[in-house]
Length: 117
Image (cartoon, rainbow, N blue to C red; front, side, top):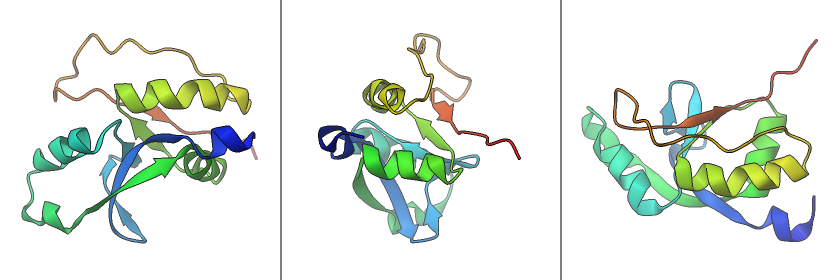
């Protein structure tokens, strides 16, 4: 991994503690902007959404998590930043069609590497 790629910000994530992050199912949500992430949090049907702290996340942090088996849910902006860098690291990802909204109005691309045992 090149140093330039390591430090590139791919998006924002939200966490309440070191073991509790904002997820869509089992995948940590990575939003392209802090405003988008705030909008996703606002759509939660819970009262404790204010407990989350927002933080930038760099490519090196996400790829390290993926190598440990973590799943990530990227919105359009974050995914378009992430996938070219991931391809340089050996993942085989391509562009996604975000033009069709999901039933929830949110469209995330889930990325997780499943290792064979």
